[in-house]
Amino acid sequence: MTIFYLPDLGEGLAEAVIHEWHVKTGDVLKTDQLMLSVETAKSIVEVPSPFAGKVVQLFASQGATLKTGEALIDIETDQQTATVAGKLESSDIVLEEENFDVSPSVTLSSQSQNWLAKADKISGLRLSMAKNMQKARQEVLQATIFEKANIAHWFDQNQSTKPDITSSIIQAICKACKVEPALNSWYDGKTQKRLIHDKVNLGLALDTPEGLLVPVIKNAQTKSSDELRTTINQFKEKNLSPELFQEGTITLSNIGTLAGIYGTPIVMPPTVAIIAIGKIDKTHHQLPISLSFDHRVVTGGEAARFLAALLESL
Image 1 (cartoon, rainbow, N blue to C red):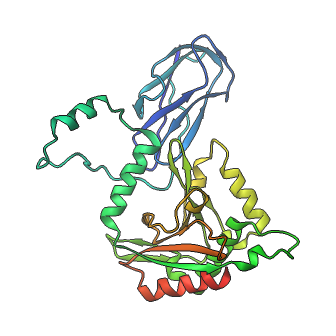
Image 2 (cartoon, helix red, strand yellow):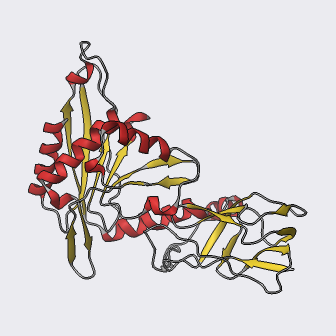
Image 3 (cartoon, helix red, strand yellow):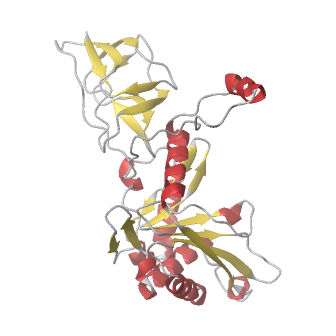
């Protein structure tokens, strides 16, 4: 028998949630066959079998939270020793251990206690989102400015092809980053250090049943509209590799595909800006834009210059 333990998650992460088992007791596995998927900070990671053999026992069920080194699966094999296989890579955002419990000064009513007894504990991506958002809100001094872009040319009936809206917005953001690079940067509040980037690694906020995902389009400033569309379509696949969530320098949230005119999405450190696109006003040919920025390091003038460049490009 060989027991497979939860591998080292890396990036300081000490636990993961079992998202889905792809095997059951009695199954015969091949080496590198997919065994299960686990949820880490901001990604779902697929875990393959490190060796061939027969599944004897699953030590945890779907939804269970396991710490690094805890037993996952028992496989009947010729190997003689228990194994911790590989290393699970995680997303680029790692939380410090913090206490997010209710303050002792707050007393829950009996009604609150009743519903809490019936409520389900969130985990995985949604729990990570909750912690990340709260930490960001506590740290960032956020401000937002709003505008509308004139996009009448998108509705020109004489055009042979219609523009890819999301790709056009991304290309406009890249041009704005060149005009005002202060928005395409990282900032660390503890050390008061800022790093301005030459490359635009654009995080694209995606709404999923498990929670918020923000895969990153690397070097977006070098990509054509068709290349951007191909990458965006790939992001819509169910499982994304962990490296796709790393090194984002600025973020785009396209809320207008569902509903909403303006929005103030949260700026996630170490980035300093996020652009929210609202629902297109097809009557007046206008595109609502919200630019939220970290006012600790970005001035109002810098934000306005960036937005003006974005409007001009659109």
